[in-house]
Image (cartoon, rainbow, N blue to C red; front, side, top):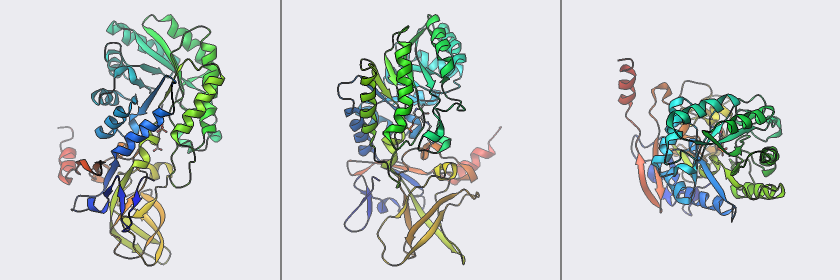
Length: 424
Ligand code: LLP
């Protein structure tokens, strides 16, 4: 949790009072990000590599706001992208093309063309996720008259039950659509080596997200490293990429810091005799989650004999994680309020039963006018939608103890005009 309680009982983020950001009719719901803390997060992780050649490819999907991506670029990060649009964004935000890896099971020809055509030599690596994709990437490189650096994303066949995370965000088991299954690796490597347009640069895997122990992370890394040793018998490799997935503490604990995951991975890499290869990772959540909150206004309360609901102006369209993954984000007042508290079920205005942020102990006092939903910097705004005709939330960027940028909520009329104009 990156918010800080001041001695006067008010909550701040990055030195800015959160209450001061709630003035005005359209001020909430709003995401607020501590850009300096995000930059520091990137630097701390990069520091863990010491003299090991590396790339921290920030997974842009977690939070693609310009100030956030630029801060991580300043820290020295590259980017892991999953669409042509994210690739364009990373390039425009100043990521050098060779520090970009592009994951994704089904890339369009237009997207592959962007990757192949970027910079003088294309991007750092197009991650090939199936044997079938090899010829598609080769064809786009051929059409552009270029060679394309690729890596093979391996599906290490890690059972989702072996990981301490939600099944929806595990990606390295044998039913997942992601990555080349172990039994097809040999054929896929041979297919790549047979294409003069392709250069095999590395092997990659990503087993899941919100892993809270380094042991869970190493389950996938171990399989990857064993494969890398075998593949090196016939092809030279420049890197191994152990993916993202470093967990954060949403309130239920996560003793491992991102740097701990890297230290553990480096130790294993050296032990397997692969210390000469660059180590890539693709963290998203751990760079940004704790450094963003959602501010919401309390619209009303509803009390029945059995339940107490606190209804706020942020809904599942603004922060989808609770509805989609039963995720719990702590909900806290923006200023300490004394007096009795109760267990309030915090819900939004969207017409869905899953528009529910869970039960939180909050003051009964009607003075509670606003709350913050914590640890919302990752997969928050980037997954927001306009369902129910709702405007996208505002975004506020804090740096150096002050607000350095903001995007207001769009007016209601914009959605109305957009929908009426559909098909015209
Ligand atoms: N690399 C690849 C290939 C990925 O698929 C992902 C995430 C990452 C890196 C970054 O993982 P991270 O470090 O953020 O765990 N929307 C979900 C998370 C989905 C993650 C999808 N892939 C959530 O809100 O929990």
